[in-house]
Length: 470
Image (cartoon, rainbow, N blue to C red; front, side, top):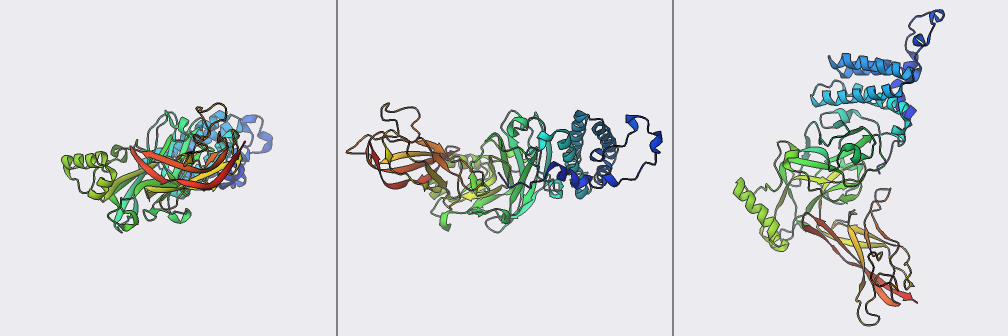
């Protein structure tokens, strides 16, 4: 999970509500205040500063509508009507999205003040929304290249409002459009938010994340949500980047006789599995997948697709040495910085905690393995299996299963790399692996990552000799 701001609910609301307590007195004599309806509005419910920010962000007719909605929220808050506050807050956030999509938004600083103040009021009405403190909504999220969208029961993609300029591998100017998609039945399911969710973010610089791969220059994104869910259902949210001009990916080691690098997404030091669900249609007017620079026209595109799909990889690499890509995509497991990278398709495995001596039929001390790309970047979702190297002679037939039951459905010898909470410890952990025969063995880790019918390959990693006793 990316680092959190640690803002308390009160502090977030205070960004915009701090001046409310000093609002001018309406001039009423306390003696004439005879009922609750005329009581002074509590400071935490006052929306005067939000109304001022709304005037800077909206124009009519939305400006009038939002002013009325803010007054209704203030009355609901003073009356303890949390449902009224919640309904009004989400309604104004949706209005902000509509105005931004229509390119009619005003001052983004005022918009940021308004959005953060609404989040503060929503959290006061329902503290569960801020169980994890929300990340501030910045002016950049409301800018021409940002994302700001309220989603719930639907699956409509979220598209950035404008192109992001960048420089590609060959030093050519290019433009990118980024978007969010979900393969869940709804955005609510994908985010585990339990209700509406506000997705927001903006382009960022590579200076904020360590990248071991070749980046597309400074192309990267910050992505957040409100409620700031503590992770979400893995594999259901997808981030994609569409390139206005296809990007040529370089060859391994700069050698044209070697395969080209594979495109993936980078998140906090981790390469993400590609998502095949995105198509050119999701990118608006951008070109669809498999349209390569050397393949003009439908016949050429068909031949290019057939060559890449049907030819053996070494032959394809030799005949078609330049791989071009119109888009990249991936599936993050939480909200954090993302950026596209080109992944070396020949990876390696490393024993972080190597196999140790043990006893037959009993779980070995925990074994941890890391899967690395060819450039040394940790990769998640890689299937790793432990095997017994050179398993011949005496004692032949050793395996990772219990000593009495023989081969079982789960022998504890298979695990997938999973990101640790710090974002950099992407490991596969084996806690139940047990060898069923005494003897001396070398244990090896073997891995496979299948992507669109093509495999990302890894070299085996093997341990020193270990000894298993009765």
